[in-house]
Length: 108
Length: 118
Image (cartoon, rainbow over all chains, first blue to last red; front, side):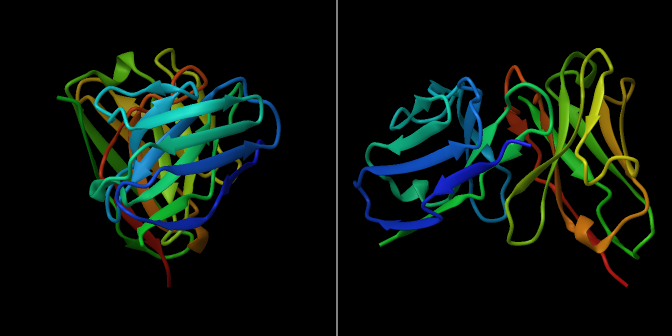
């Protein structure tokens, strides 16, 4: 199985800050990488797919990058509604498809 | 609008069975890949199962042989039959449209809680 390791596990930031979350795969996943946002008690929401493609309805302050085994999620200017947990998800090749352990973004 | 509504979650004893339902609207389940993903309390997300539009089915190793995914096209509903339940199956179960190795799941339901405990 492909293991996904996110960093950091949690972070504290202020409104307006630029935030970067990283995700490393245990093997190359050819940009088959998505990012989800989850708020407490809610379903995950798709933000980005194919490493850098913004899902319909996701704010443009979210962007993704990377290749091979290393990927990033950047929030250019953190907004109050962005405080949540973020998960990376690989959907490369055959199942099982796996998720990172999550990064909780909290208010500083 | 795309909507997914799960139901059927409950408290069940170890070894018991449960069937989850996911009613879809705004699209047809037969024309889409459909997935189940679960989240244990306070934990991360775990992919459980997928059914392709051409009826290929896959399961995660932790549920293989115990869970069965299916769909009813007349009711536009996805199901997850869960047998031989274990305490470690305790989680919120989400159904989601899509999944697989082309495109990740784009719309998710709000989930239904399954608790396996004596």
